[in-house]
Image (cartoon, rainbow, N blue to C red; front, top):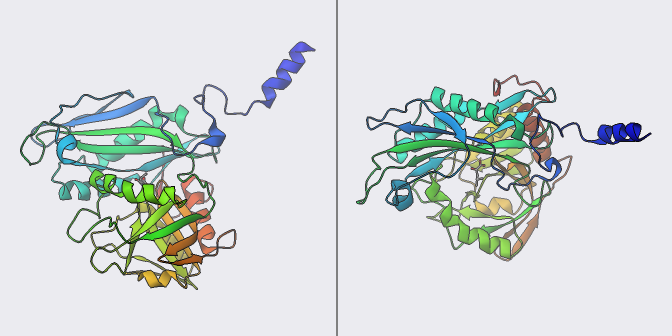
Amino acid sequence: AQAASALQEERKKPVYQNDEYTDLDWDNLGFGLNPADYMYVMKCSKDGEFTKGELSPYGNIQLSPSAGVLNYGQAIYEGTKAYRKENGKLLLFRPDQNAIRMKLGAERMLMPCPSVDQFVDAVKQTALANKRWVPPSGKGSLYIRPLLIGSGPILGLGPAPEYTFIIYASPVGNYFKEGIAALNLYVEEEYVRAAPGGAGGVKSITNYAPVLKALSKAKSLGFSDVLYLDSVKKKYLEEASSCNVFVVKGRTISTPATNGTILEGITRKSVMEIASDHGYKVVEKAVPVDELMDADEVFCTGTAVVVAPVGTITYQDKRVEYKTGDESVCQKLRSVLVGIQTGMTEDNKGWVTHI
Ligand code: COI
């Protein structure tokens, strides 16, 4: 009887508690750091060539106190995700697009950069080496964070003499503490995120610490994030601290045009393509903040955020509510995107890489 009941207990265990998986509470993944076993490191030689990288156990790295990244913020990063299909196989979503974006960012920040092939190969190796950390199908993803840093020492302002490309990974669930519930945002009028001619359009690390003040103010007031306005007229929407923004009115979906101050999100452009495939008119333009006042829906997109519905936006003394839920445009686009990303729906776009 004891053996039978032990067997019964064994059968009750979720299928993912075995050697295939590391021991984590897969049902409650947020966006906290749970570093996966291995990181990938590739150094750039003095002549600007990246030589063969390798995997090593995740851990601290050594840097000179005078490293360019620490003193002058010379670094860019990427974010991409690996998903586990129901059959256990892993999928990557458009890693080549991250590689291309890193190259553009590296040019802006005067850094050498791994080739697209080197980048994609390194992402694949990192995902496969950390397979135990890729959540079970439907429970989240392995967030993969490639970093390119000016690691060499320098005193006067200038490009660092050496560069390091690093990738680490962590399993994640929903980005916002709201889970998939609608976000409450407000329009930030004091702080701006980026200015024309600056580096707002690339994933420079220098775009992120300066938004913390606005973000913490927003959180202390009970909002999830803020929407930034253009720095010149304070009249047009830019993006949130961690994601792009879309405004829906009827069958038209507008999003701020990328003019150098807005991050060219890979989820942003994937959602634009999905929306126009589904018959929506997709417009990239300078979106006046006033259009928020009579929009049907607003939603945010990003690798970390995926596609997140916005329930309310507060602008000056007005609070506007938007449609959310199963029948929303946001939900429709989200489910098509997530279907492709997770291998649940057929990918007829060539976005998914099986590894
Ligand atoms: C991402 O969506 O991958 C990002 O890089 C945003 C970051 C603030 C988590």
